[in-house]
Image 1 (cartoon, rainbow, N blue to C red):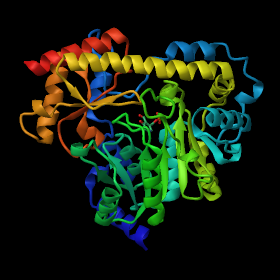
Image 2 (image 1 turned 30 degrees about the horizontal axis):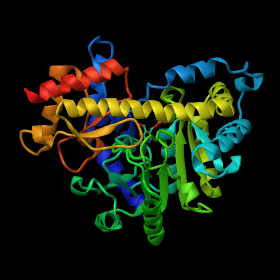
Image 3 (image 1 turned 90 degrees about the horizontal axis):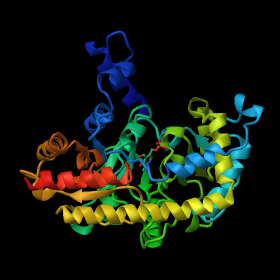
Length: 421
Ligand SMILES: Cc1ncc(COP(=O)(O)O)c(C=O)c1O
């Protein structure tokens, strides 16, 4: 009844809208409103300019040498990679993943049947949420947040994200009270909580106690919880990473984990994301959608060789922590020298800068115009906080692993100079 009414409203409003042209309602909706944010469009337009420094996209460029070298030594691919295979990933690759993830971040082994592989974390999220919630249902997302969740869940799944706004005054802490307030305020049936750990854009790692609080709160409200652990290996600070898999003997039917090669291996272009779940019905439903999001057999082969190489994985993880830590310390020293306030981070590949004092007034318009002025004056692109759905204007995400050392440090100096003018 609920879903039918939602659909009916949409169809009627589309029939009355002449802008749908020759397309379907949904086709016209997509064509009429590009989901690509302005800072991303500017990034794409400027990417070839010599002095452009793009610090707005969450990419890890620090590890490419190691990843490319290891992929280059992979054994020749067997003929099977040319053909159809299981749509949620070849059995052999999922077995390699099962072992690799146990050793590196999950802390325990999941059978390969509880693992599904799709082309990127975005596809995993889209397919999984298709099966967890119906059009018009709501998903709780704590903010600040990864900008892409809105496109992932709202575009084809037609879900509504209800932000759980956290405040800068206490370091954007997620509390059960904030979760309860968002749940109570939602005008739509809430089905899932989507929790990112380590966090994007804060670069913070949740403690076991924080994970426990989230799990208990969600269980008390009969909600699914999806733990996005895409930055699990990119941890260099004092708080070690704890996967939700290691705080519970069993995930049960309502707790699910997402990971991908995109961030920890700086391989977002290879498009390989992973779902871990004990919910057989969910796995079956995702299997039914997987044909449209398959990871190339050749890519699975290459990645499988890499993660099955224990010595490489051990060295890689150590090097990842070390290189990220060095870059973080260099960039935060440069930020301090440039008079730019930032929030301390211990994981992932970005941090939040607090530029509230440079806003002409505490509004979203002032934040957008500061972003534009910095971009025009310095040719350095950072992510405006509005894109990360931060509830207060004036915070900007800076991706410090997104380019070569000299360029990133020069970008910070240029930002500091422009802010002091
Ligand atoms: C928290 C989070 N989840 C998911 C994604 C999407 O990753 P992928 O490129 O594997 O689709 C990102 C990318 O920035 C992210 O930061």
